[in-house]
Image (cartoon, rainbow, N blue to C red; front, side, top):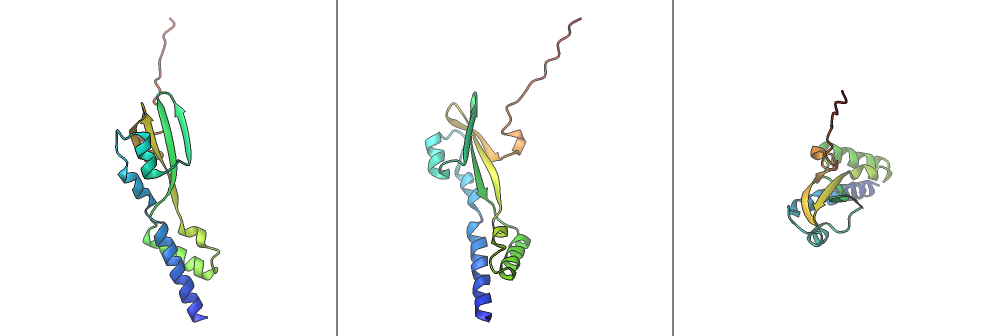
Length: 127
């Protein structure tokens, strides 16, 4: 039994470490890249959308777990014999915004209101 618990713990730690860092692919993306270059690095997006003049690719990428999250993952998984394995994976949504077919901006969804097209307020005086 002692060997089974040790083996399960090792698998959990390997699983947690192996999923971390997929967001680092985004560091290979640069402004001015075309869609083919982005697709080569990132693969197909989870979703895509467009609102002229922008087109968006959205990716749900795994992010590195903190030390505390890794410990919680390992303890929970071993204690529940695998039922807590979902805690080993943490994902965030990242976007790539194209204008004219070229990367115009990219980052975590919500960064600098990146996925919102700017709006203007116009006050009209009717007097």
